[in-house]
Amino acid sequence: MTDFSQIIKKLAVEQIISFMKTGISIALLSLSLLASSAMAQGSAASDGLTELLHRVRLSRGGDLNVLISKRTGSNPDIAVLLFPGYPGILKLKEKAGSVTYEVAGTFVIRARRFLNSDKVFTVAVDCPVDQWNACGDDYRSSNQHAEDIMDVVTAVRTTYGAQQVYLAGTSYGTVSSSFLARALGTKIDGAIHTATFTDPRAGRKTHGAPMASFDWSKAQAPQLFVHHKDDPCDLTRYSSVVARKGDIPLITVEGVTNPRGDACDAFTAHGFVGRERVVMTAIHNWITERKLPAVVGTAK
Picture 1 (cartoon, rainbow, N blue to C red):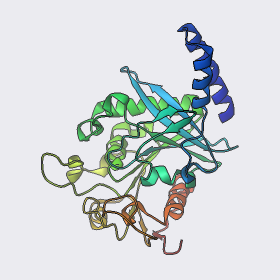
Picture 2: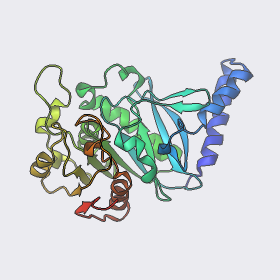
Picture 3: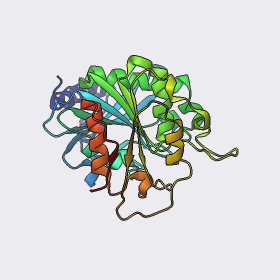
């Protein structure tokens, strides 16, 4: 099992060697190393976590950044790759000693601390830098997306000691978790789809169109649906998941606290607001023990 602090030190040394070869000044080097091991931007989302931005060099060329999060002092060996909701572009960067990112309110990102444990760590997955202006349906449903994420899976296994790798998407991020679950086969250990995108709107400028007829049964790895019974978003109807899930298990979420924003915003029942802990706990227990409650969230 790999010690996270040792990984940070090892990456720092590698960065020193790389930067010295390219002639970057010691002052800039020190600043860069500080950013590399910094905690993510200050918010409750990272409470109790040690976090590291990792740049994955893609086999095709270019970079894809991920945020590795582990409970401080732990050495878990189950990785869960997180795919955020629309537009799903985190734009992970190092800035002034911190890791910054966008779409911080999306469920899997803001609630990641509840999924981290002594057994499980999370990997927030950005879009490749060359996809920061789009990262839409064409890319998410492509073989290229699968190849890029396979590079991430390889890095997570070899650098961070992951023995098992799961995918977890929310809302528009389930376009990725769904297509990847089929494309990666037994190269992953499972996939979780939360607030699954099932009912894309018609029109040329819509997003999520491939999900209208998506067949999850073609995936080889175990899968789990997690959906709020009262999801108000017309793109992610609870009734559609129930009708289309086939034999894939479903955890139904009930209850909400202080919902706000439009129906498809992250701080409504669509994003499990007020039920973050119980939902992530249920996902954690399915991953680690295959526990499967029919309903969660009736009490906080």
